[in-house]
Length: 349
Image 1: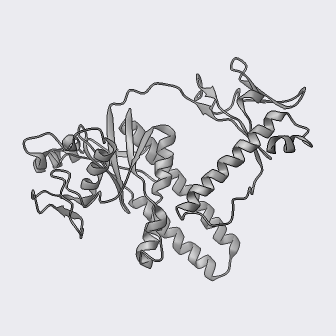
Image 2: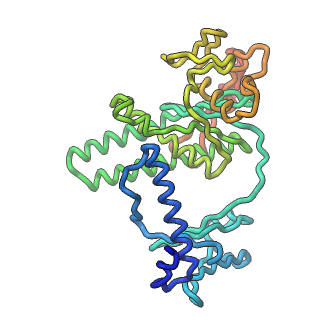
Image 3: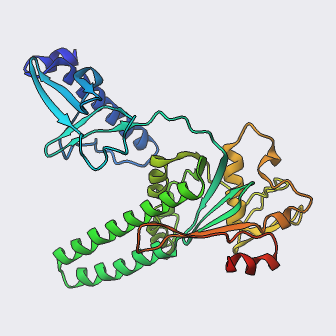
């Protein structure tokens, strides 16, 4: 009935009506899920910028000439070409998805159907100043996020000064510059992870930032600090260039990865198990538990290092950081060691 009603005064091809209905239902269903979970307001979503998603049936793609012919009306077409563009070589051999038409641009999504042979599964624990990972073959991985926090703190102060002086243009300038630098940092971080750990599945925490920044649950100072770290943006960007997964963050830093005992409270940066006596950084504990939860079909001890002396194996660590200038991330490798004596040797290399 809805389709018949919309087709009455529509001069365009009928497939566009099908696309509109499908897109609208998808948006409403997404809003409904978020609303039931308390993550969206009662007001229904509104389209602020017009767009049209083009169905495959409305497109004729020629991969030899690298052009797309889109049917607008019967016997009326729009031709779009990606030949000679900056991304032409990157998408060689890829297939075109559903094109999105906006008022000022046309967005062409490409899909890569390349088969990836997974070599490792890495669990990542997101923290304020670091991203800590674990994989048995590599050991523990420490990514320094302090430069990202530095960007946030610097621009928070600049925006506060501009706001106090009631300079809206200056405030918007600082806000745009902050977004640009944060995006640049996340892009370099994601590219560095893929180069450093190729053919991997990166498992992140399914964090609900609404709970971390809730006025009822978190104090103001802690709430502000939690809002600075864009964990979901990092996860999203990595998912665009590598295989990713997610796991529940509940009790990840309070459960012993060796015996499974769960402590009631966690104070400080070190985890101490009262049952088996394990002592380890709680960030490393969380990374191991996140990885283990992702591998739910495996035995409980699957994610723990197989060694006669597991605490010695746990000293193996690979450290990496992202430079604020330049194109390539700075990987402090081979900073990989198994004992205190090898640490200096690793730094010298």
